[in-house]
Length: 125
Image (cartoon, rainbow, N blue to C red; front, side):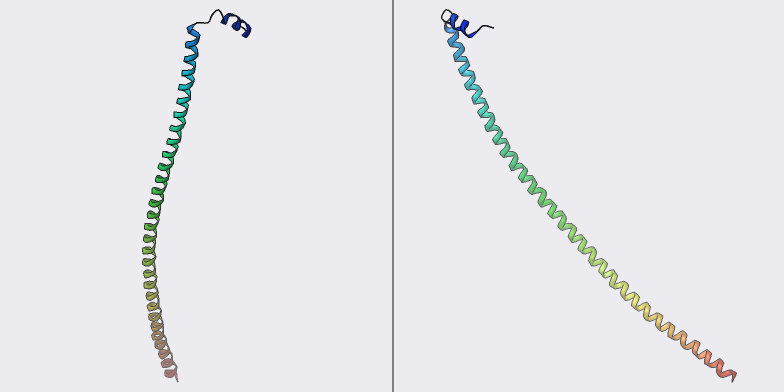
């Protein structure tokens, strides 16, 4: 590599249009790079904004679908609860009926056994 002093020494001799074109090209390249960076920053912001909107819409859709699914489950569970309550009431009525039939049957059997016992005791005297 050449030192800065050497460059300054030969620059007076080697000064022509190429250096001017290089400087113009470097300015143009720096401007184009700056413009490209600016455009990429704008595109990034636009993409982030669009992604945020899409995400919000998707989450809202998921939320509404989840709410609808849960409401349908609640309706199904309420119907199941009503059916089970009706079954419990029917079983309670059947149990009450069985209780009364059992008591009546026990009473009849008790009367028959009591009458037989009284007849046997009375017959032995």
